[in-house]
Amino acid sequence: MTLTRFKRLRPLPIALALAWGLPAQAATVYFNDFQGAVGSEWSHTGVASAPNPDYAGTRLFLGEFGNDTVSLSLGALPEHGFVTVAFDLYVINSWDGNDTTSINNQPLGPDRWQLSVFDGPVLLDTTFSNGNPAGQAYAPSPFASGCTPYAPSATPGVYAPMTGASECYSLGYFFNDPIRNTNEAMDSVYSLEFTFAHAVDDLRLDFAAFGLQSLADESWGLDNVQVSIAPIPLPASAGLLAAGLAVLGAWRRRAVQKT
Picture 1 (cartoon, helix red, strand yellow):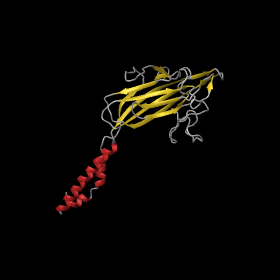
Picture 2: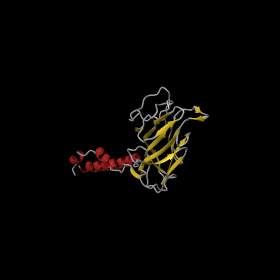
Picture 3: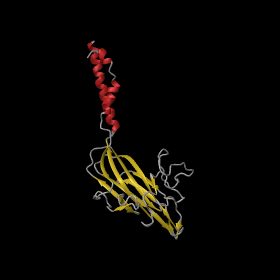
Picture 4: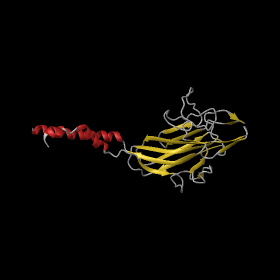
């Protein structure tokens, strides 16, 4: 190779191309839509069917749960630096969100839902409402879509019921309210996703609810649970980039010395 031809090469793009060759994409290590048997990786294995007749028993999900902690435990994970968990949360019947009032000496709420990593971070701790005007604490990014879109709140932590829900009134649940003498459609679905740093070969995710009333009044479920892992991208990419630039620099010096 002559010096003239070497000058036509662009060291930075070549090194970047080498760095981009790293396997940076996430790899799915677990998925369950609960259409079949539920394995021992789950602490609770009961499955329910959404009552909407349009689904005719085909929309199965893990649940229904009340004030329970439901755990997913995975082991022997390949080497990784990050975990992404994505799932659909079914919020069923009369969740009262931020409401702290009582009826017949029984508190209505707050109705909290939480996702945490065992020996790790709490990924979500919030309230949900399926119609109670006291609102809910959960609100996604202002850019997220949903059947109840995000709207700025004058009160921190108080948003409209069902804010950010991907589905509203789709599951077929109806709540019979003896106090107001009403029977209303009352359910919502949230498509949630969280990414967090994680490097050990075992993982336990804890899904939990607090402050709920009876299952006939307030319950929840899970569907389409997917867990993916990814390497730590930046250090590896930066190291390969530096190595590529060093090699190209050595080639340039050798080529200059030969002229």
